[in-house]
Length: 443
Image (cartoon, rainbow, N blue to C red; front, side, top):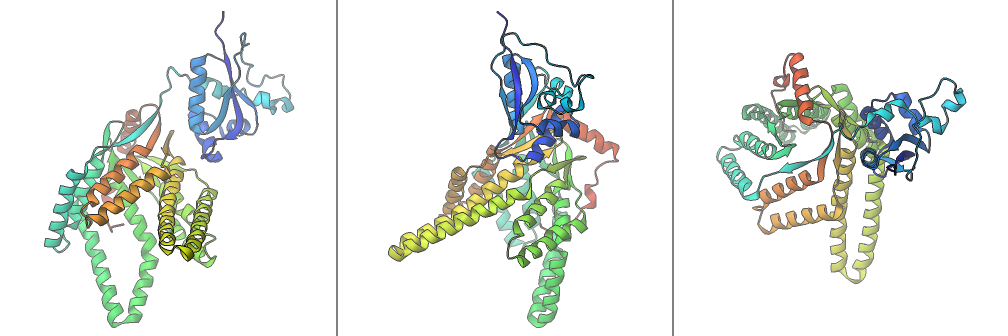
Protein backbone atom coordinates (compact mmCIF):
# COMPACT_ATOMS: atom_id res chain seq x y z
CA UNK A 1 0.00 0.00 0.00
CA UNK A 2 1.41 3.40 -0.99
CA UNK A 3 2.35 5.80 1.80
CA UNK A 4 -0.26 8.49 2.47
CA UNK A 5 0.53 11.92 1.06
CA UNK A 6 -0.64 15.35 2.12
CA UNK A 7 -1.34 18.75 0.61
CA UNK A 8 -0.13 21.85 2.47
CA UNK A 9 -2.78 24.59 2.59
CA UNK A 10 -2.27 28.24 3.53
CA UNK A 11 -5.54 29.64 4.83
CA UNK A 12 -4.69 33.28 4.22
CA UNK A 13 -4.68 34.20 7.93
CA UNK A 14 -1.94 35.34 10.29
CA UNK A 15 -1.58 33.76 13.74
CA UNK A 16 -2.28 35.85 16.82
CA UNK A 17 0.69 37.86 18.05
CA UNK A 18 2.23 38.34 14.59
CA UNK A 19 2.15 41.35 12.25
CA UNK A 20 1.02 40.57 8.69
CA UNK A 21 3.68 42.71 7.00
CA UNK A 22 6.44 41.13 9.09
CA UNK A 23 5.19 37.60 8.34
CA UNK A 24 5.07 38.35 4.62
CA UNK A 25 8.59 39.73 4.68
CA UNK A 26 10.02 36.76 6.58
CA UNK A 27 8.15 34.29 4.38
CA UNK A 28 9.59 35.87 1.25
CA UNK A 29 13.13 35.88 2.65
CA UNK A 30 12.92 32.32 3.96
CA UNK A 31 11.77 30.88 0.62
CA UNK A 32 13.49 33.23 -1.82
CA UNK A 33 10.29 34.76 -3.17
CA UNK A 34 9.77 38.07 -4.90
CA UNK A 35 7.44 40.65 -3.37
CA UNK A 36 4.98 39.98 -6.20
CA UNK A 37 4.86 36.25 -5.44
CA UNK A 38 4.34 36.92 -1.73
CA UNK A 39 1.51 39.36 -2.44
CA UNK A 40 -0.15 36.82 -4.72
CA UNK A 41 0.00 34.07 -2.08
CA UNK A 42 -1.21 36.23 0.80
CA UNK A 43 -3.98 37.70 -1.31
CA UNK A 44 -6.09 34.52 -1.22
CA UNK A 45 -7.94 32.61 1.47
CA UNK A 46 -7.06 29.11 0.26
CA UNK A 47 -3.68 28.45 -1.32
CA UNK A 48 -2.15 25.04 -2.02
CA UNK A 49 1.53 25.58 -1.28
CA UNK A 50 2.67 22.00 -1.96
CA UNK A 51 1.23 18.59 -2.79
CA UNK A 52 2.38 14.98 -2.37
CA UNK A 53 4.13 15.49 0.97
CA UNK A 54 5.08 12.51 3.08
CA UNK A 55 4.12 12.77 6.79
CA UNK A 56 7.60 13.82 7.96
CA UNK A 57 8.01 16.54 5.34
CA UNK A 58 4.41 17.70 5.84
CA UNK A 59 4.87 18.19 9.58
CA UNK A 60 8.21 19.91 9.01
CA UNK A 61 6.49 22.36 6.65
CA UNK A 62 3.69 23.05 9.13
CA UNK A 63 6.16 23.61 11.97
CA UNK A 64 8.26 26.03 9.96
CA UNK A 65 5.39 28.08 8.57
CA UNK A 66 3.64 28.21 11.93
CA UNK A 67 6.77 29.66 13.48
CA UNK A 68 6.73 32.30 10.78
CA UNK A 69 3.18 33.19 11.87
CA UNK A 70 1.15 31.66 9.00
CA UNK A 71 -2.11 29.77 9.53
CA UNK A 72 -1.57 26.52 7.60
CA UNK A 73 -3.12 23.08 7.67
CA UNK A 74 -2.67 19.70 6.05
CA UNK A 75 -5.35 18.21 3.84
CA UNK A 76 -6.46 14.70 4.69
CA UNK A 77 -4.24 11.97 3.22
CA UNK A 78 -4.60 11.53 -0.52
CA UNK A 79 -4.04 7.84 -1.29
CA UNK A 80 -3.09 8.37 -4.92
CA UNK A 81 -2.05 11.98 -5.22
CA UNK A 82 -1.24 13.25 -8.65
CA UNK A 83 1.89 15.32 -9.29
CA UNK A 84 1.58 19.03 -8.49
CA UNK A 85 0.33 21.18 -11.34
CA UNK A 86 3.01 23.18 -13.16
CA UNK A 87 3.51 26.82 -12.32
CA UNK A 88 1.12 28.92 -14.43
CA UNK A 89 1.08 26.92 -17.72
CA UNK A 90 1.34 29.02 -20.90
CA UNK A 91 -2.18 28.03 -21.95
CA UNK A 92 -3.78 29.71 -18.92
CA UNK A 93 -5.61 32.96 -19.28
CA UNK A 94 -4.92 36.02 -17.17
CA UNK A 95 -8.04 35.34 -15.15
CA UNK A 96 -6.92 31.78 -14.38
CA UNK A 97 -3.49 33.02 -13.31
CA UNK A 98 -5.06 35.14 -10.62
CA UNK A 99 -7.28 32.36 -9.27
CA UNK A 100 -6.67 30.97 -5.76
CA UNK A 101 -5.86 27.53 -7.12
CA UNK A 102 -3.19 28.79 -9.46
CA UNK A 103 -1.79 31.10 -6.80
CA UNK A 104 -0.97 28.04 -4.75
CA UNK A 105 1.51 26.73 -7.29
CA UNK A 106 4.35 29.19 -6.95
CA UNK A 107 7.54 27.52 -8.03
CA UNK A 108 9.94 29.04 -5.45
CA UNK A 109 7.76 27.90 -2.54
CA UNK A 110 7.46 24.40 -3.94
CA UNK A 111 11.19 23.89 -4.02
CA UNK A 112 12.30 25.98 -1.08
CA UNK A 113 12.04 23.70 1.92
CA UNK A 114 13.81 20.38 2.19
CA UNK A 115 13.66 19.06 5.77
CA UNK A 116 16.81 17.07 5.17
CA UNK A 117 18.94 20.15 4.38
CA UNK A 118 17.19 23.12 5.96
CA UNK A 119 18.31 23.88 9.50
CA UNK A 120 15.82 26.05 11.33
CA UNK A 121 16.49 26.00 15.04
CA UNK A 122 15.00 27.74 18.04
CA UNK A 123 17.95 28.86 20.14
CA UNK A 124 17.45 30.20 23.64
CA UNK A 125 19.82 32.51 25.44
CA UNK A 126 21.59 31.12 28.49
CA UNK A 127 22.74 32.96 31.60
CA UNK A 128 25.28 31.34 33.93
CA UNK A 129 25.82 34.05 36.55
CA UNK A 130 24.90 33.63 40.21
CA UNK A 131 23.94 36.06 42.92
CA UNK A 132 26.79 35.47 45.38
CA UNK A 133 29.42 35.78 42.66
CA UNK A 134 28.01 39.09 41.47
CA UNK A 135 27.53 40.26 45.07
CA UNK A 136 31.32 40.23 45.55
CA UNK A 137 31.80 42.34 42.41
CA UNK A 138 28.97 44.70 43.38
CA UNK A 139 30.09 45.35 46.97
CA UNK A 140 33.69 46.04 45.90
CA UNK A 141 32.42 48.39 43.21
CA UNK A 142 30.39 50.37 45.75
CA UNK A 143 33.22 50.63 48.28
CA UNK A 144 35.83 51.74 45.74
CA UNK A 145 33.39 54.21 44.16
CA UNK A 146 32.80 55.81 47.57
CA UNK A 147 36.51 55.90 48.44
CA UNK A 148 37.44 57.51 45.09
CA UNK A 149 34.53 60.00 45.23
CA UNK A 150 32.88 58.43 42.20
CA UNK A 151 35.89 58.12 39.91
CA UNK A 152 35.92 54.31 40.15
CA UNK A 153 32.29 54.19 38.90
CA UNK A 154 33.61 53.91 35.32
CA UNK A 155 35.59 50.79 36.22
CA UNK A 156 32.60 49.49 38.18
CA UNK A 157 30.40 49.78 35.11
CA UNK A 158 32.89 47.91 32.92
CA UNK A 159 33.27 45.10 35.50
CA UNK A 160 29.48 44.77 35.79
CA UNK A 161 28.88 44.83 32.05
CA UNK A 162 31.62 42.30 31.36
CA UNK A 163 30.23 39.99 34.03
CA UNK A 164 26.71 39.98 32.56
CA UNK A 165 27.87 39.93 28.93
CA UNK A 166 30.34 37.13 29.58
CA UNK A 167 27.78 35.01 31.40
CA UNK A 168 25.18 35.41 28.64
CA UNK A 169 25.51 32.89 25.82
CA UNK A 170 23.80 32.17 22.53
CA UNK A 171 24.52 28.98 20.61
CA UNK A 172 27.46 28.24 22.90
CA UNK A 173 29.21 31.62 22.47
CA UNK A 174 29.33 34.39 25.07
CA UNK A 175 28.82 38.09 24.41
CA UNK A 176 31.64 40.58 24.93
CA UNK A 177 31.76 44.09 26.33
CA UNK A 178 34.80 45.83 24.83
CA UNK A 179 34.68 49.37 26.25
CA UNK A 180 37.50 50.62 28.44
CA UNK A 181 36.92 52.47 31.76
CA UNK A 182 38.72 55.64 30.65
CA UNK A 183 36.30 56.06 27.73
CA UNK A 184 33.38 55.94 30.15
CA UNK A 185 35.14 58.17 32.70
CA UNK A 186 35.57 60.95 30.10
CA UNK A 187 31.84 60.95 29.41
CA UNK A 188 30.96 60.99 33.09
CA UNK A 189 33.32 63.86 33.84
CA UNK A 190 31.70 65.87 31.05
CA UNK A 191 28.23 65.05 32.38
CA UNK A 192 29.26 65.94 35.94
CA UNK A 193 30.72 69.27 34.82
CA UNK A 194 27.52 70.16 32.94
CA UNK A 195 25.37 69.18 35.93
CA UNK A 196 27.49 71.29 38.27
CA UNK A 197 27.25 74.25 35.88
CA UNK A 198 23.46 73.90 35.78
CA UNK A 199 23.12 73.70 39.57
CA UNK A 200 25.26 76.79 40.08
CA UNK A 201 23.38 78.69 37.41
CA UNK A 202 20.02 77.66 38.84
CA UNK A 203 21.12 78.85 42.29
CA UNK A 204 22.67 82.19 41.35
CA UNK A 205 21.20 83.00 37.91
CA UNK A 206 17.81 81.30 37.43
CA UNK A 207 17.42 82.67 33.91
CA UNK A 208 20.76 81.14 32.88
CA UNK A 209 19.67 77.87 34.53
CA UNK A 210 16.50 77.83 32.46
CA UNK A 211 18.53 78.43 29.30
CA UNK A 212 20.88 75.57 30.18
CA UNK A 213 17.92 73.27 30.80
CA UNK A 214 16.50 74.19 27.40
CA UNK A 215 19.88 73.48 25.80
CA UNK A 216 19.98 70.09 27.49
CA UNK A 217 16.53 69.22 26.16
CA UNK A 218 17.64 70.23 22.68
CA UNK A 219 20.81 68.13 23.03
CA UNK A 220 18.98 65.04 24.32
CA UNK A 221 18.53 63.40 20.86
CA UNK A 222 22.25 63.84 20.18
CA UNK A 223 23.08 62.28 23.55
CA UNK A 224 20.81 59.32 22.75
CA UNK A 225 22.46 58.72 19.36
CA UNK A 226 25.95 58.91 20.86
CA UNK A 227 24.99 56.61 23.72
CA UNK A 228 23.42 53.99 21.43
CA UNK A 229 26.39 54.17 19.05
CA UNK A 230 28.84 53.68 21.92
CA UNK A 231 26.95 50.78 23.48
CA UNK A 232 26.60 48.90 20.20
CA UNK A 233 30.12 49.60 18.94
CA UNK A 234 31.60 48.08 22.10
CA UNK A 235 29.32 45.04 22.22
CA UNK A 236 30.27 41.91 20.29
CA UNK A 237 29.37 38.27 19.71
CA UNK A 238 31.68 35.73 18.10
CA UNK A 239 34.20 38.42 17.31
CA UNK A 240 31.77 40.67 15.42
CA UNK A 241 30.71 44.01 16.84
CA UNK A 242 27.26 45.49 16.78
CA UNK A 243 26.69 48.96 15.39
CA UNK A 244 24.24 51.84 15.24
CA UNK A 245 23.64 54.00 12.18
CA UNK A 246 20.88 56.34 13.33
CA UNK A 247 20.89 59.83 11.85
CA UNK A 248 20.73 62.89 14.06
CA UNK A 249 17.89 64.51 12.10
CA UNK A 250 15.65 61.48 12.57
CA UNK A 251 16.65 61.32 16.25
CA UNK A 252 15.31 64.84 16.78
CA UNK A 253 12.00 63.75 15.28
CA UNK A 254 11.54 60.63 17.41
CA UNK A 255 12.99 61.87 20.71
CA UNK A 256 11.85 65.49 20.61
CA UNK A 257 9.19 66.26 18.00
CA UNK A 258 6.90 63.25 18.49
CA UNK A 259 6.94 63.39 22.33
CA UNK A 260 6.04 67.10 22.15
CA UNK A 261 3.18 66.31 19.77
CA UNK A 262 2.09 63.55 22.15
CA UNK A 263 1.85 66.07 24.98
CA UNK A 264 0.04 68.61 22.81
CA UNK A 265 -2.56 65.99 21.81
CA UNK A 266 -3.17 65.07 25.49
CA UNK A 267 -1.49 61.70 25.07
CA UNK A 268 -3.18 60.56 21.86
CA UNK A 269 0.11 60.46 19.98
CA UNK A 270 2.23 59.09 22.84
CA UNK A 271 1.92 55.41 21.69
CA UNK A 272 2.87 56.50 18.18
CA UNK A 273 5.86 58.41 19.56
CA UNK A 274 7.01 55.27 21.41
CA UNK A 275 6.53 53.24 18.23
CA UNK A 276 8.70 55.65 16.25
CA UNK A 277 11.39 55.55 18.93
CA UNK A 278 11.53 51.74 18.93
CA UNK A 279 11.56 51.70 15.14
CA UNK A 280 14.48 54.15 15.16
CA UNK A 281 16.51 52.28 17.79
CA UNK A 282 16.01 48.75 16.44
CA UNK A 283 15.92 49.58 12.73
CA UNK A 284 19.22 51.46 12.90
CA UNK A 285 21.04 48.80 14.91
CA UNK A 286 23.11 46.20 13.14
CA UNK A 287 25.29 43.14 13.71
CA UNK A 288 28.40 43.48 11.58
CA UNK A 289 27.00 44.83 8.32
CA UNK A 290 23.52 43.30 8.60
CA UNK A 291 20.83 45.61 9.97
CA UNK A 292 18.05 44.59 12.31
CA UNK A 293 14.47 45.01 11.06
CA UNK A 294 11.51 46.06 13.14
CA UNK A 295 8.22 44.95 11.63
CA UNK A 296 5.73 46.01 14.30
CA UNK A 297 3.06 48.57 13.50
CA UNK A 298 1.76 51.49 15.55
CA UNK A 299 -1.45 49.57 16.25
CA UNK A 300 0.42 47.20 18.55
CA UNK A 301 1.53 50.09 20.75
CA UNK A 302 -1.99 51.51 20.86
CA UNK A 303 -3.30 48.10 21.95
CA UNK A 304 -0.83 48.11 24.83
CA UNK A 305 -1.86 51.64 25.80
CA UNK A 306 -5.58 50.82 25.71
CA UNK A 307 -5.04 47.64 27.74
CA UNK A 308 -3.10 49.50 30.42
CA UNK A 309 -5.68 52.30 30.53
CA UNK A 310 -8.48 49.76 30.91
CA UNK A 311 -6.72 47.87 33.70
CA UNK A 312 -5.80 51.12 35.46
CA UNK A 313 -9.31 52.57 35.34
CA UNK A 314 -10.95 49.30 36.34
CA UNK A 315 -8.57 48.65 39.21
CA UNK A 316 -8.77 52.25 40.38
CA UNK A 317 -12.58 52.28 40.44
CA UNK A 318 -12.80 48.99 42.32
CA UNK A 319 -10.15 50.13 44.81
CA UNK A 320 -12.00 53.42 45.37
CA UNK A 321 -15.31 51.67 46.00
CA UNK A 322 -13.70 49.07 48.25
CA UNK A 323 -11.88 51.72 50.29
CA UNK A 324 -15.21 53.22 51.33
CA UNK A 325 -16.00 50.11 53.33
CA UNK A 326 -12.54 48.59 53.89
CA UNK A 327 -9.84 51.28 53.54
CA UNK A 328 -6.93 48.88 54.06
CA UNK A 329 -8.13 46.46 51.39
CA UNK A 330 -8.76 49.38 49.04
CA UNK A 331 -5.17 50.56 49.53
CA UNK A 332 -3.80 47.05 48.93
CA UNK A 333 -5.86 46.73 45.75
CA UNK A 334 -4.57 50.10 44.56
CA UNK A 335 -0.98 48.93 45.09
CA UNK A 336 -1.76 45.65 43.33
CA UNK A 337 -3.20 47.58 40.39
CA UNK A 338 -0.06 49.68 40.11
CA UNK A 339 2.18 46.60 40.22
CA UNK A 340 0.00 44.87 37.64
CA UNK A 341 0.22 47.86 35.30
CA UNK A 342 4.00 47.95 35.63
CA UNK A 343 4.42 44.21 35.04
CA UNK A 344 1.84 44.04 32.24
CA UNK A 345 3.40 46.98 30.42
CA UNK A 346 6.86 45.41 30.52
CA UNK A 347 5.57 42.00 29.43
CA UNK A 348 3.55 43.32 26.49
CA UNK A 349 6.25 45.73 25.34
CA UNK A 350 9.03 43.13 25.52
CA UNK A 351 7.00 40.57 23.57
CA UNK A 352 6.01 43.13 20.96
CA UNK A 353 9.57 44.33 20.43
CA UNK A 354 11.27 40.96 20.16
CA UNK A 355 8.55 39.10 18.27
CA UNK A 356 8.71 41.72 15.53
CA UNK A 357 12.50 42.00 15.24
CA UNK A 358 14.64 40.12 12.74
CA UNK A 359 18.30 40.02 11.72
CA UNK A 360 18.62 38.84 8.14
CA UNK A 361 16.74 35.55 7.93
CA UNK A 362 16.92 35.07 11.71
CA UNK A 363 13.96 36.10 13.82
CA UNK A 364 13.87 36.98 17.51
CA UNK A 365 11.13 35.79 19.84
CA UNK A 366 10.04 36.46 23.41
CA UNK A 367 7.43 34.78 25.58
CA UNK A 368 7.28 36.84 28.77
CA UNK A 369 4.32 35.77 30.93
CA UNK A 370 2.48 38.13 33.27
CA UNK A 371 2.25 35.66 36.17
CA UNK A 372 5.91 34.63 36.24
CA UNK A 373 7.21 38.12 35.53
CA UNK A 374 5.03 39.71 38.21
CA UNK A 375 6.23 37.08 40.70
CA UNK A 376 9.84 37.87 39.81
CA UNK A 377 9.26 41.60 40.17
CA UNK A 378 7.45 41.33 43.52
CA UNK A 379 9.95 38.93 45.09
CA UNK A 380 12.90 41.04 43.90
CA UNK A 381 11.33 44.19 45.35
CA UNK A 382 10.55 42.53 48.69
CA UNK A 383 14.05 41.08 48.87
CA UNK A 384 15.68 44.47 48.27
CA UNK A 385 13.41 46.24 50.79
CA UNK A 386 13.74 43.61 53.54
CA UNK A 387 17.56 43.44 53.21
CA UNK A 388 18.00 47.23 52.91
CA UNK A 389 19.36 46.86 49.40
CA UNK A 390 21.75 43.94 49.93
CA UNK A 391 19.56 41.62 47.81
CA UNK A 392 20.12 43.81 44.74
CA UNK A 393 22.83 41.58 43.16
CA UNK A 394 20.57 38.53 43.43
CA UNK A 395 17.65 40.52 42.00
CA UNK A 396 19.74 41.62 39.02
CA UNK A 397 20.96 38.07 38.37
CA UNK A 398 17.43 36.66 38.65
CA UNK A 399 16.15 39.25 36.16
CA UNK A 400 18.95 38.43 33.71
CA UNK A 401 18.21 34.72 34.01
CA UNK A 402 14.49 35.29 33.43
CA UNK A 403 15.23 37.32 30.29
CA UNK A 404 17.56 34.61 28.97
CA UNK A 405 14.98 31.90 29.59
CA UNK A 406 12.20 33.80 27.80
CA UNK A 407 14.04 35.32 24.83
CA UNK A 408 15.46 33.38 21.92
CA UNK A 409 16.40 33.34 18.25
CA UNK A 410 14.69 31.47 15.42
CA UNK A 411 17.88 30.68 13.51
CA UNK A 412 17.89 29.90 9.80
CA UNK A 413 20.93 27.70 9.26
CA UNK A 414 24.23 27.84 11.13
CA UNK A 415 24.76 30.98 13.21
CA UNK A 416 28.49 30.36 13.25
CA UNK A 417 28.54 30.60 9.45
CA UNK A 418 26.43 33.77 9.64
CA UNK A 419 28.89 35.33 12.12
CA UNK A 420 31.84 34.30 9.94
CA UNK A 421 30.19 35.98 6.97
CA UNK A 422 29.81 39.17 8.98
CA UNK A 423 33.49 39.07 9.96
CA UNK A 424 34.47 38.78 6.30
CA UNK A 425 32.23 41.69 5.29
CA UNK A 426 33.53 43.92 8.08
CA UNK A 427 37.13 43.13 7.09
CA UNK A 428 36.32 43.97 3.48
CA UNK A 429 35.06 47.38 4.59
CA UNK A 430 38.36 48.20 6.24
CA UNK A 431 37.84 47.08 9.82
CA UNK A 432 35.80 48.27 12.73
CA UNK A 433 34.80 51.90 13.15
CA UNK A 434 33.95 51.59 16.85
CA UNK A 435 36.89 53.71 17.97
CA UNK A 436 35.13 56.76 16.54
CA UNK A 437 32.70 56.54 19.44
CA UNK A 438 35.26 56.96 22.21
CA UNK A 439 33.10 58.73 24.78
CA UNK A 440 30.26 57.15 26.71
CA UNK A 441 27.84 59.79 27.95
CA UNK A 442 26.19 57.35 30.34
CA UNK A 443 23.00 56.74 28.36
